[in-house]
Length: 474
Ligand code: P53
Image (cartoon, rainbow, N blue to C red):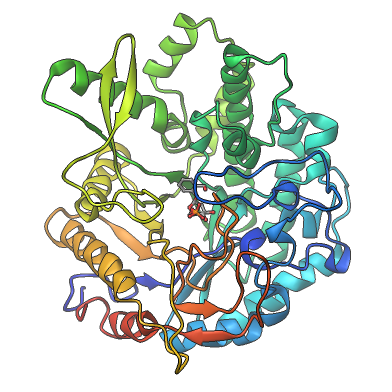
């Protein structure tokens, strides 16, 4: 059965956030320090620094964020007013295990999410939960070197198991690792730190970085598979998905060398979801490891685990496409002259979303969920307090149109849509507040000043109507 738009009647409409980007309260009720708590503020093209522990005099925007920890009741009420029937957030690992390697969880942290999920259910809002969204306990980074250490698998699996048991009746939709494939950009310090808690030492050159990234990634896909397996034992009705950043790579021209390099780089970018969906490494990656003399520690037992813990659906973020051309032995990312870009230089490509849905459906034959999409933009508060943000609804409208085409014309099995940052929060990439995604404005600036008051933007009412009509009235 479908509705007028063609979407399923139980289509999941909501919004997405991550604990570290909105909760604040970084030391409340026994919470430990996470990797996000040592990320300084950056700006457009000014990278955030990862400091060695929390240093005096630095600005760490995630420490207070928008203080959702103390505002969640009022915020969820606003989500309910918009008509959300789902809400994607993450569980801050350090609220449950402050250091990451304890055996007993922190009851106060578990209780916070009991209350949060109960508040969602009060309004018929289904939580969609990411277990690890750039929130590795910092202790695991400083003492174990992050995911370069196999022991971190057990710490994660223990964390997952505790959450699955505690929330077995309050959460049905889960994802293991947020944008697990970002780290393919292993030369970017921020990306490897957020994904895997990898902080490279000075003597670790490019080849070492690459090898460690594959090692950490392997441990993560094993941990993910173990979590899937245990989760299904705890509650067979759980739907546990992977979560990849999906950025299709378009060949810059019809030259066969460009087509091939785009295809090869797609293989290198999406092997994480291949493993999570298929239960084994794609042959192209096995060949790549051999060719490059990469010898990740992959045991025969690991390979069995991978087979036993395949995911139920594919969750993915979609913001933009990228365009790639062959460049000597390698490749380069080039501008796509057919696309406009945002103020933060992200291309805007709604058709790319339909392309992505087709690609993922054909590759995995699994249900899909768009768990992030959106436009980071500056907003202006008018004298009367209103916020006119037609650029935001225009961006989302164009993407929802393509999503609906993918469902109706291409037969894609799509469960839901949760645009990113439904309430303004701290940008992951830049640490800014001024890069806003929300339907709900939060009064706080990049220097941390503001009342934290919430107000409805014009897009709030637009999205409310979209949800009310299940996507028929855009
Ligand atoms: P911001 C890089 C590239 C694409 C998506 O990003 C990314 C990142 C990491 O910065 O992250 C995802 O806040 C991520 C969210 C993040 C969102 O996209 O840099 O899952 O945590 O906030 C938007 O504009």
